[in-house]
Length: 489
Ligand code: DUC
Ligand code: ZN
Ligand code: ZN
Ligand code: ZN
Image (tube, helix red, strand yellow):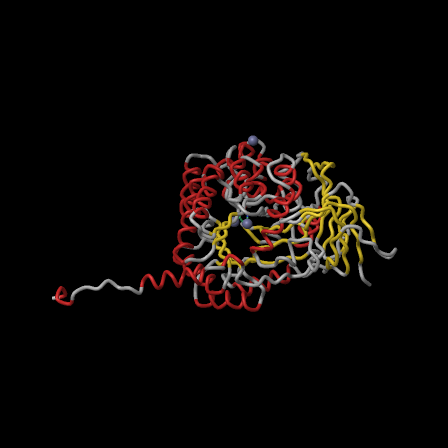
């Protein structure tokens, strides 16, 4: 049976343009975008008068069903995706963590975890060690498995962290495969030292987390990764940019023409670190993530950078643990599982904070929540657009309605929410994923197994011009200095 939906009378917003138009969907694909589309009675009609019709959100950064810090995230692919759909996100890209360094085995494990998906998804794969097996695995993942990005952790010494020699090998291999290198930019050795310092001072609570890994360590690692990517001449994607320090490095590199992408996350844009000083451990510990949520001022600087194009897209780093899991670190902040929620809240919070406040337009909103992600990971215009032929991943947002966030009503399995009690303008009233209405009248109607794995091809637009600049560099080396033979005696 075919599903046919007509969305009537709304303002259709794409990253490049907005217009009053109807949108007609058949069998999961957008087949018409124009005013006054006429259809028969077998079609489900949604009235979007006075509302915005936009591409579903794409979250470039989530961790569902991840084993981490001695436990596993409370949201798996089912609960995480259901939460996402209720909040207007219709695709996410999760991070495959290798099994004992084995990336293909890790990928297969994530294929299993995501088997019953109710929305479309893709994967990045982390690189956590280096040998010939790794470069072969990277090649298999790019050429056969639909992977076009690899993440390198410069923090988490002793588990996920990579050293500079490994990062350099990884950057070279990414470049040769047309894959995008991503970095978690904090100096892991210095974080380790900072943690020791706090414990020696007797600071064992959640505030020690913030104090042990200050912005300067994020700035250092961001600068280092950017410079090494420039040395290799390959594009770089900096995940979860949390500080002005890191953002300044990205701004400088972009100004010089280097291809560096910066991804702030909702928590870094909106929250500040005062929560970590809360006397109630349950409250303070829920804000523990890495890099840490920063002091007042950083969030606004990141918002400004997003609105001026220094930063390009917004993720969440959704990585949820309930309060009993967070209590693993009751006596030692180093054992608090790192991570906050955001997958369900991202679209609402960014609308309220950035569009509701007048900082950006609706078209910019679509760009930073959906279109830019699709372009970077090379799946545009199938994703990230309301165009004829695009996948029918669509939201209807009512700008005149409002929304309150609470763990009592959210769809994540977590018993807490870092945005508890927050009210904002704008409400996603309908979510259409893969041509199905999955969220309407505050009700989820997800279909297990309907989510598709989206293969992401290599060599995105970020690789344009790299061959040419390499050739220019090489030819500049091929004019050796002429020295007289007689001097060599
Ligand atoms: N940071 C987090 O807070 N959680 C998951 C991994 C990470 O880098
Ligand atoms: Zn990270
Ligand atoms: Zn505050
Ligand atoms: Zn992450």
